[in-house]
Image (cartoon, rainbow, N blue to C red; front, side, top):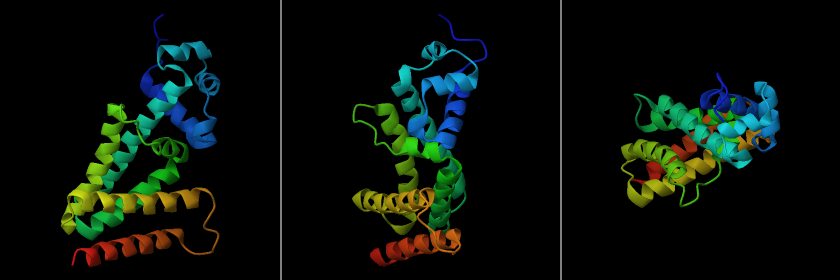
Length: 189
């Protein structure tokens, strides 16, 4: 059976991502996606291998978009300016795409080289920014884990309504990133 004319993977992923952002990643079903696309659910099997296949492709799509967002955020920048921009780009991605962001959080299985490569591109981007501080190898990877924990923690708390105080949330993010950057400077003295 050939795929429906006009239905292609890009449209399918874009629509599924919209549904994930609106309803949450785990709430997306093949029936929901088919209804949104105006097709019958069996037609989706020409493009994805069931719900797990759809979620896998959404995760890859999310990783690609997150990488693009972070890359644009650091373009032409180095050092502190690049780290501030990287952190803001990450949190902004999570704000704009909460469901798709959720899809990116699953660590790839060891045997999944495509997902590992996409996740590795994000790690490589962060490690590249950290080179301005003289960090490399394990030091850079530890710092990358720390920065990821900071950005994810902030994004997750914000998404779940964890910042109820009447303070500017972007100022809080800026201060948090500044504290991380100050720590990197002190660590490498």
